[in-house]
Image (cartoon, rainbow, N blue to C red; front, side, top):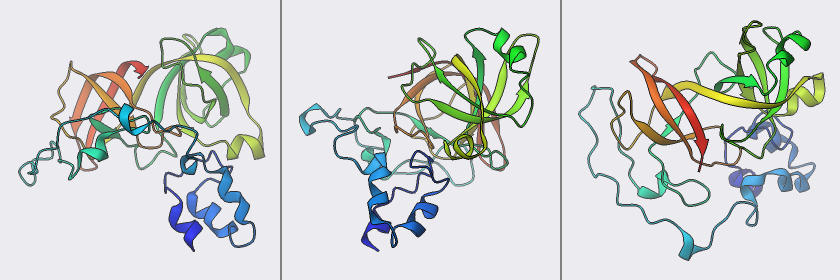
Length: 232
């Protein structure tokens, strides 16, 4: 029971199980599986207390009820990533998607045609260089593909599906943009502004940065598109 309470509930899939609850069900039989959770490791992504970035206190009051623009956090700690850096909002994935929606292009765009990438395919690859430079190999399911330009839209998921069902390997790719929903933010979101944000399902729980170039209020939340991505 104590092991179950410690699970972060991020459903990142890095442990090999799709959901934290799936891992939880196995802990009675194999408690050592808890070691697979990178978010419980004190060594992996921690910072010394004196190195933690000090952020100003969050506003005490929420925005007017029903305006749909933003909600204020109760604590400034909520708006720090796993390395102690401040960010402005969480990016959630669309409810109909299996994971965050990412627009990508292989470093060699011909890979899209060489691999005959189709909607529904499972892919792996790693974002390289200025377009994030994330150290984690990403896995995802294709939701749209343009064989002429090589641009692919996929929903990033954990590694369980490619491990069990196989995959196509893109190699290195550039992350061109994210699309998703904002449910929580500590500031008003405006088109043309660059923000620090944290994808809710990021395995490392690191902040990203992106320029908002599309914004729409919906029943599910604020729909945004962010381009010009980088981490840090």
